[in-house]
Length: 215
Ligand code: ADP
Ligand code: ADP
Ligand code: ZN
Image (cartoon, rainbow, N blue to C red):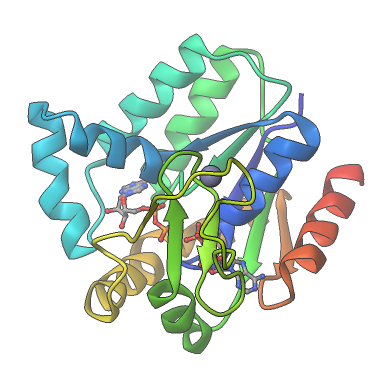
């Protein structure tokens, strides 16, 4: 059982690498961003409450995201979980440890995807996602095929996130440095932190992560 966290600012490539790991290793991706976007469209009270917070680029409450993760860990069995975009605060990190311990599990690695801010604006403003399978594209580095079909599922509808603007990115980056980056020291102290160069090409990043998982 290899459970890992992909840690990094918005646009670092967490979702892209998580999908590769799902395909290559049958691990299960748990993305709180995806779960929250799903809740947003569900018309539930919680969905409506988080929509505005997400649009601004702020973090939703620990209580909500911990609840979402707890529910998944309760109902899903996997050869390994990839936590993508969770935890984002120290309280979430503590909760995750407790939730895994209750299942008799722990974390194998926390992989910090290191990028610099200058690259993130281009990453975020060029991002598009397949509406049917979630494959992640980029206008410049991974364009949607000229025939308009998703390489992964053949789908023809692509979406851009409402919070993928330069303005919201500023708030999201500030939230990362203020609330999430303390996790780097926290996991370093636990001996779990591994760094990869997130600015390398997608295949090279995937190879670095594979090497960590094999170590
Ligand atoms: P990115 O892929 O750009 O890192 P995500 O899809 O992970 O962004 O998250 C999008 C938004 O959802 C965040 O800006 C935040 O509002 C909310 N969110 C996602 N995960 C969490 C979390 N663990 N804690 C609090 N808010 C979260
Ligand atoms: P995150 O989940 O961390 O927010 P994504 O995986 O959604 O990041 O990637 C953000 C954008 O950057 C996407 O458009 C994606 O195609 C692109 N991207 C991801 N990894 C790389 C990479 N190594 N090199 C160039 N572009 C990348
Ligand atoms: Zn697709």
